[in-house]
Picture 1 (tube, rainbow, N blue to C red):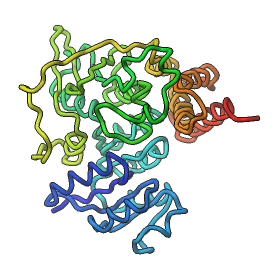
Picture 2 (picture 1 turned 180 degrees about the vertical axis):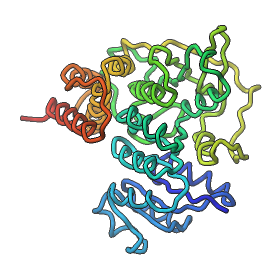
Picture 3 (picture 1 turned 180 degrees about the horizontal axis):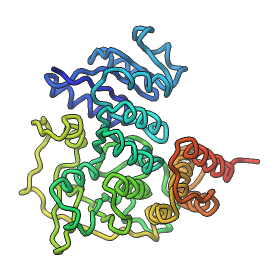
Picture 4 (picture 1 turned 45 degrees about the vertical axis):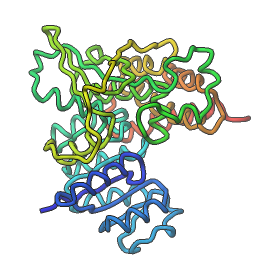
Length: 381
């Protein structure tokens, strides 16, 4: 029997790659539902090709642009949650930003298999999600390339053998620029990643290294590991995606070409590997693998993520919300690239301190506080 799969964020880079994987494995999956934030034209193409049973578009204003049965067409977060509550087996959450939190929580409540590509779910509500997974027995499989690599490596390692885990970073497009040059970076430059083809938000986060900071926070909850044992290492070739260091000072690494279809396929097949029509990794063609310590002076966003983890849950929530606002302001040309971490740090210094946040209502209150606080910093009087 084919597994029914619901894709949230179907028009984004992860959603499109998921549909490519399904296109290669049509005997295994049925596209039960598609949901996206916008891009009605692309959604219509996906509807035509994959024939989903249900569809949801987050932006209600674009509903009339969607060519689909009105009785099976939903809008907004509530529409996505309604689809999750139906009989799909697997929910792929590839929504961008904080709008992905509620669908993640709903998928876990409904005991679906959650293939999670939405970083903000674990960043905002890591404590809540960890408790839900433990209590309900729901299954969460990470889709990020780094977390997928670590998830696979750690399956075969006993906790007492583990020393540290390492998350690799490409370093983004500006890893060789000095601090002064970073001030003049333009949005179109920041949105041109040298290795990965990703959505706008994650591409910018990669340029500031905030993406790695968010991944450190995710890893803390995914693998129940202390932040002091999570390292980030710059690896421009993007061939090693996760590394574990063991107590005997040996290392085990996961290698693959930088292609998101690999971790996506692993997640939706629940850890069963199947052939993929992608370019294989050729060891003979790899001339050099390099590794560097991140420069936290030029890229302070990574330091801020560690600082937020040390401060507690409310700081992490504030970090994420402030970064969303500041990043969008940079994309719109209202602030400089180097202003992003400055605004985030200011929000961290003033956030309503709370070490543990274990209810969703409080998460949203803190998120809204940080959003408003940061927006007020660059509003024209």
